[in-house]
Image (cartoon, rainbow, N blue to C red):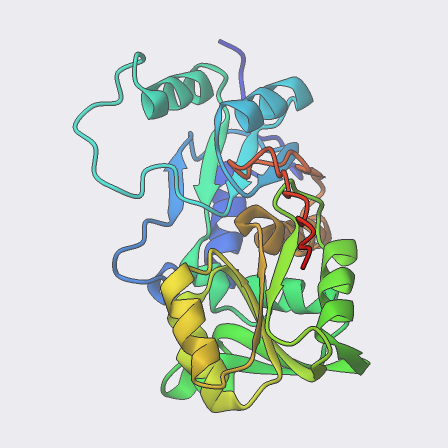
Length: 286
C-alpha cells in the first residue's frame, strides 16, 4: 500500500472535511439525513477531488480514472440503515471499491440545501434570478443569515411560461427528461421560486409567496394538479440531477479557493430516466 500521508501544503482528508463541515454544518441537516464523512482515512493526502451528485458505480469509475483522493457527493450513499456491506450488494461493492482504492467519500445533502449559498442558489443563478431570498426560511437566528430551503428571485425581464421553460431547458444540464411546464403557456412570469431536487413539499410555500412560477424536480401528479386547481403558481418540473448539478460548480470553486487541490466536476448524468419519447398529436376530423 502506498503512503498517502499528506505532506505540507497538500491538505489531508481531515482538513478538507473540517472545512466542508464548517461551510455546511452537519447540525443543519434534517434529522433523517446522513451527512459528513462516509469513509476514508483522515490523514490521507488529498490532491484531487471529484464532485458528484450521486455516488454510483459510474461516478466511482470516474473517480478512479481521474485519480481522485476524495469524492464530494450531494446524495448520501448510506441514507437508510444497512445490515451488510458485503461485496455482492450494490452499496457494498461501492464501499469496497473506494476503500481498496483509498478514495474517501463525503456527503453534504440537506445541510447544503439550506445553506446560504447553497444548492438552490446555484440553481437560481442558472436562470439569472436576482434579489434572492429563501422560499421556506429557516427559523430563529438562521433566518437572518439567509438560510432556508429553496430560493425566490426576479427574472431579468418578464417571460411567458413557455419561454421560461425553454430558458430552463437551455440553461440547465441536458437530460432525457428535459423540462416540462404546467399552466397557461402564455402566462407572464416575473418572480420565480426554485428548489434543487424534489420540491412538491414546498408547493404551499410557493403559493403563499405569490410567485408567478415554481421550478423544482419530482413533482407528482395529484399534488401538482390540486396546486394548479387552487390557482397556484405555474409549475416547471426538471430532472432531479439537473436541478442539483449546478451546485457542484460552486463547491468546486470554493474548494479551489481554500486548498491547493485539483477539483473535477462530474457531468455524468446519473438521472435514472434515459429515454424520452413524446407521442405525436393525432389529428381529429369532423
